[in-house]
Image (tube, rainbow, N blue to C red; front, side, top):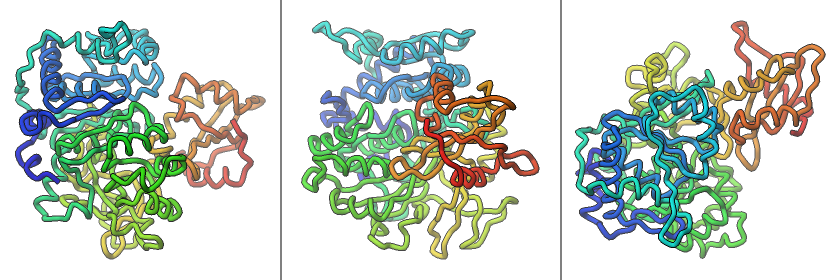
Length: 535
């Protein structure tokens, strides 16, 4: 880890200026073979920051981005930081209605838009109106050769702006990022993240004297593959941690296993962050050989533990260190890590999430908030300096999640005698498919709007390929009939495709507790005993 990089910076604005001064010619970003140096990234993001200010965007303003990952996305992230604004990345897999909610809820004043998602944006903007949204900046344009250029529109927008440094007056505790994630209500909430989030872990590791090889680390000489979407904390957080270290980043607009394998070999990638299913997909590629991955020093993975079979294949083929991450959008940064030393075939800790990283603390509590002893299952709580500022405009939800500095993670688990965390179930019922969070209440709400459906419950069931698969249990109205494919077609356009259940089960009733809450564990048991109807 580059110690100096982190000691001298407290904000992304400062980190950008430092990188441009210390390593101007080093490549910051590689995307589809286009290279951007740290000097150019700093200069162009300065111009974009001035253009934001000219458009009336100031400190605390929300700026949305709807587009795939590219050098243009990360430029706008830094431009917002330099203008004192907050970037709101929008999941490009969402429907128009879902995008409209985020634009409205965030009070976004400006939208950066990739032409690929113009129709989705048109649907979002066609409603009753978004009073706060004043400006739409299209990223695309025509290059000098007359062909489509994904960055030409953005460059034209800030072309006349000065390239001088900006001083938005922000500090480490000021917000810079707002990521939308759902809760048990099914309504997406904006998680507000501050500048400090991307500096606390390296600072804590340095202060503790911890060996970076034992944890997750980013180095100035790293070549990092960004394979997870930038609209989630995993993708944008991985980039920003590496950016603050001065590393080079190879950006994938969308994850394709064959392309990931090619990029690792072509660019000498040294570090990356993936979901276990992405490891499996790379290993299944024809060109996946130890020689292909010779440059790798460490792979971080998250969203699910690694199976022993996948571990054996990974150690044999990737030939590098493996580290598991446990975190959440609300935690901001890596909270818990299972270090490379625990990744041994037959190792007793392979089913553990790990131990808290330097600077973090962990405890497990009962329903009354009392700390439980080792071995007893309760709610997992993390204390980390990287935690969110709060939920945007939702003080009550923030107060429920952050209690006396402790973040309630929404997961059930227990600690062993040595302080390793073992997860048992998700208290908030989140389903994770290939690293993507899906919230049952959101899907159930849409299912219940079908005229044949009287009641609905959505659960995740184990899936060898994706980690989990989405299944739905429905109770039909008296005399109603509906085919699974009809339900699937009904949900298309209402939900992003990855949220739509792949199996539908018809039940006479749903198991509920006395207060009316669906007993999801009982639903899973019922589904396991019933015959699944394929969509």
